[in-house]
Length: 101
Image 1 (cartoon, rainbow, N blue to C red):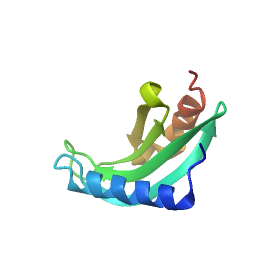
Image 2: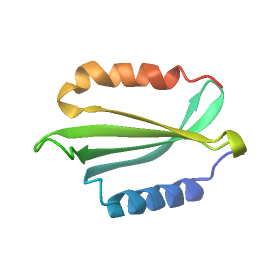
Image 3: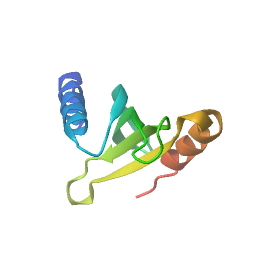
Image 4: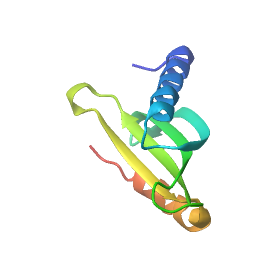
């Protein structure tokens, strides 16, 4: 089933609310949720920037790849230090695009 823009927007708002209310995550920037096709499956990809819980002044770019497929649903979390975006963003994309099920 294809997700409507209303469903996507509702999902995005709920994800942001849940993550901003989490005690262990300090979100600096919310990039939102989009759909992405990987190997003929539609994923909901939510991205944001968060502060490190260990090192002051360190930030991570996080992407949650969620496949909604009944009992086979899962979420893959990929993140990297934003100081190394030019090196790690392409690798993160390669990992995400290599998903097979």
